[in-house]
Length: 86
Image (cartoon, rainbow, N blue to C red):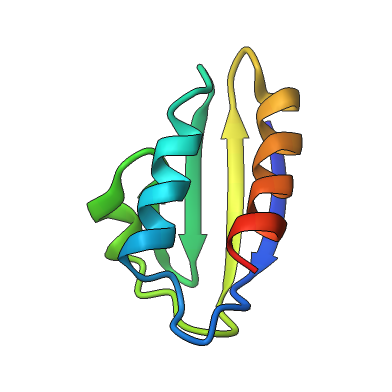
């Protein structure tokens, strides 16, 4: 299991467009991608699940990646968040 935390920098929070990009990006990995915002948890490969997190500007998303390609997925998702969600 690999984990990392990302703080939402977008003033609009994790709205539909970036959530859709994140879900699409996460789907390329075999590993399970779970994302938490406080007490709420979602499947990182499902747009509606990500939207249900209610992640606003400044929210800390905790990523938990488990599976065969978890090392590669963690590195790629961290880079994606800093490049695409920032």
